[in-house]
Length: 238
Image (cartoon, rainbow, N blue to C red; front, side, top):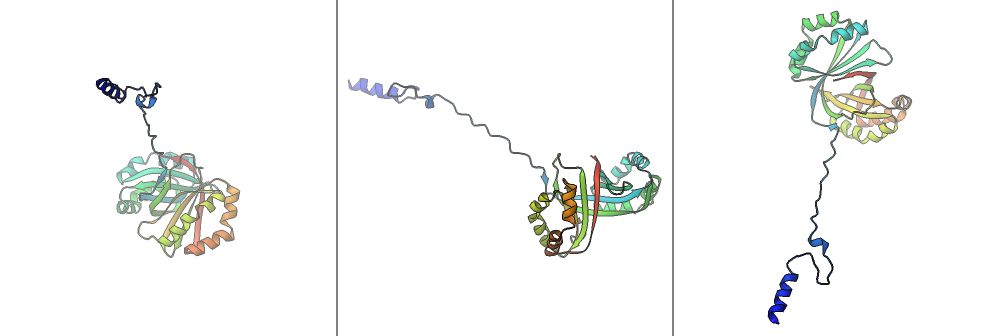
């Protein structure tokens, strides 16, 4: 009898899927598989990136665009890579070109070369181009972002103070029809700031740009002097 009792106890403890009350113990026979979902990919890029922005006017947009597209080899040879082309909203002859730069020193030297000046003249560019050599520290690469954009340049007393205040005001801009696209500073002077926003609501944005609220926020964040704004529409993203 003692031997039988021992064998019974052993069988009941071997995990055969049957409980002592005669009911099937499903926890002993069911393998639980936990699948981990892949983390959502962020569209925000905060790694510093060198970008050259050029603004100029053209006498004939169609001819300029055809000529611009033939100059890829010239840009690539100087470490410049196509990024964004934009066209002014108020003045359709105003053009914005943004290119990524492998080497800012080389990019600066290229802008002074006679070959580039000649290419611009042949490419129907009129007047003197304005170059912005920037270190961009924030980019929102969301594909659904509006192609209507604004780039603003201005001077600040202190980069870190301005940056903190600007980031704290993101919801205010969203409430006023604007989404942060990118911002950064001059490659040699972080007191010179550049901000690009996507315009989701033109009426709200125009009202905000002329509001006392924005003036107060600028003053509090240390913006000094004039603010230059160019509103454009993206015509090509590479």
